[in-house]
Length: 480
Image (cartoon, rainbow, N blue to C red):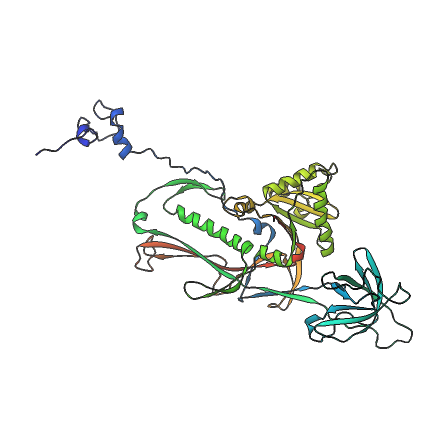
């Protein structure tokens, strides 16, 4: 019996004589015929990782427009002021020659409605208007409160034909512009409580971890990398831990943007009930302004007309002067095209007021500004809407317009009025535990001995919620 030899085995390399030093001799080098050996045992490895996707993190939106503040409770509650003036767009009227109008009663429980005797109102439908005097309240029935009126501009005090016989399918609009009383009147005035709306949100708990077993830790492998924040260097087996942390920080921001409240009962695999949370998009869908299918780059001035439609709605909401626009690439370019068609914009029409009027500061943050009407807008691309692994995969939302400023609201926990950015994060924290972003290590590897598991587990946890205050000042640009 004999051993068979192959040209690829070490037996054929017996002519090589190893030397104790790195020196060239006639019998210690490998020829091209021996390259199978070098490929197996001496691979050529590029130690620098190739950055094929560039900076992959999508965080930054909330850092630019919001703030993070601690809270001790498991719920945040705030109140937002109501309108100062009284207006309705759900008014119905009687049949032809009507001298009555009706409104759903607040709460439909017999409480005093917001309209009262002696008020003077403007009633309208389209361009047809009538000014009327409220004589008295009718009898509340089925949650509907009727009002007896006299129309000033009609000899019989009746509504014009175009405003009569309006039902819930084609309601009228109404607003109060004053009152009128006769001489020596008594019981004058209508007591009206200030209206406000209370909102709340609950924090959600986010968790993730990175695990590496003890055997992989023992085999050291170095990789040269450039991190997402611009620094570079060598990482050992914890490179994946570094990426896990970056991914978790992205999830913190994405959850605040995307989260929604559960309508039914959701139970996790450990029996805990999950309620969800109202994130930015859900808040704007419910309480904000939604502009569908924006096309600001349309020819012939149509794009600018679309933009002016947004301005008209901001006027109705009493929006603040300075706003930031976070857009996907297509919408950003369409606005560039819209502005390029307007000769009045350029160096003289550009404002950087929200950045202390510093052009350098605005441009360094990726913003470019322009002014339209009485509003200043600062535009930048939002990577979250462009990335093919986030909203760029769906492309149903093309941008959001965020007011740049603060709102004053009543904080139920503090018991006082406070100023907060319109968009901000509240996280759970106390003297005993800060849950803004916790990280800890368990296992028996890497100098940490907390269990008998032959691994190192790096855990991440955060408990936080989103507060979108004065959502009527935001605009969600949506593709349908």
